[in-house]
Length: 410
Image (cartoon, rainbow, N blue to C red; front, side, top):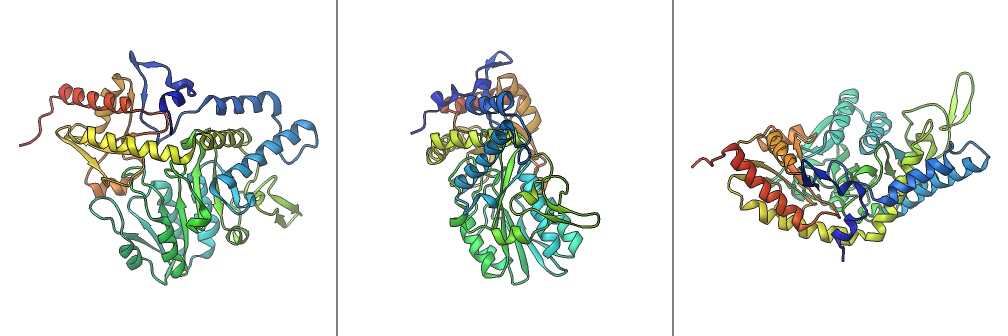
């Protein structure tokens, strides 16, 4: 079992007052806070091991390289990747998805080919495919959403055709909380000769991910959403696909041999990691994986499921409050609107109570249009949140209603 109060003690930033109230941090889908072990790992690297990797034969260079490549091994184990060479370090999910869209899709797609996505995608898993379609003449197609913000396998079957070359889909929606059946979607994609690219930004921190069991072709995630530093993430890819991809950044460290008029690339994974990498970020990500594995991903998932269900029950009784997304089988977030009060105003009032939530379109404007709203507020939970945090949120939302004099339309 997970003890959120004990775990909260490991996060220094959570022990402060905001506007005279103890901080309740409910913006974890945007970024999570960092435990002492991650902060100390980054600090220790800069204090003792700071050097460039793969270059120096001196002691610091060797220690830095060991730490960097050791972090890659941890990521591979965390995702159950067949080999660490299939893990490419990136700046995060956005960079990883752009790498696939530019390094793979633009080379492989032809006019008349299809890219299949959904309207629930974060802009990071939408705009790169828009651009790839424009550059190649491919067609962008959307799996329709059900009224509760889920998709059906029947609609996946109907949308993915023999012309489909890429299915790009989020594992879990950052707005709706919807968890998509990735293994079944991968099966449908492969049956039609397509590959599947998965945005794992909102799934990787909250549940066990096994890229081999899911049979995904590419999988992207960000470290900062799972207790790691900002500016670090990773792309997993099947070896044959990565080997046939071209790098999109060129320079030092990704080369094998450079002549005046031509160059050759290093083997995986280094051909995709030109320049000095995010060494301290990788070290911090490795420490974050150690922390999460010690807590247990199953424990985190169970805790968030209970907490989200409790939040749904507490918030759904507030008159005039609308919750978006499925009622069950969702990741740990609740997206809502409070009558006709603008979400930014809701978030501002909550901040005066020391409660941090997200407000806006959440980098998902097509989804906002589908929901027929311009913006929403979002409370998102993690391993250090408690039912008391949800109670504070619910009580403050009632105060927000009173502050704006909201009366439901009868």
